[in-house]
Length: 86
Image (tube, rainbow, N blue to C red):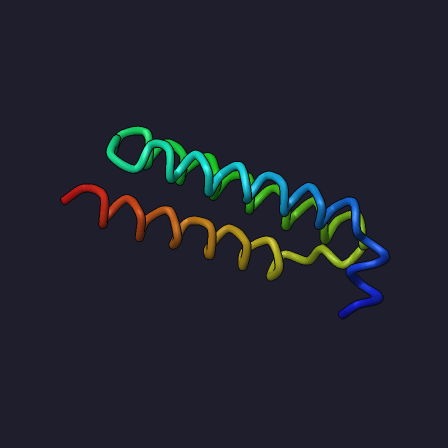
């Protein structure tokens, strides 16, 4: 795991920075349901794209990996959307 982290530190740095900004924005807009849904959608799309690009650069992108990122991103968005809709 540590070799993987050292080898792809730029990719993981970008992921860490964007997720940190995402968490700050979620906290900042915690009372605005519409903005929270929008931020969750943007965060899910970023996660899907980051995962696919990350595996593509490593040469390990397969359909099942892409489907896994799509499914997980969609399920997280759906969970947030459902909770925030009430």
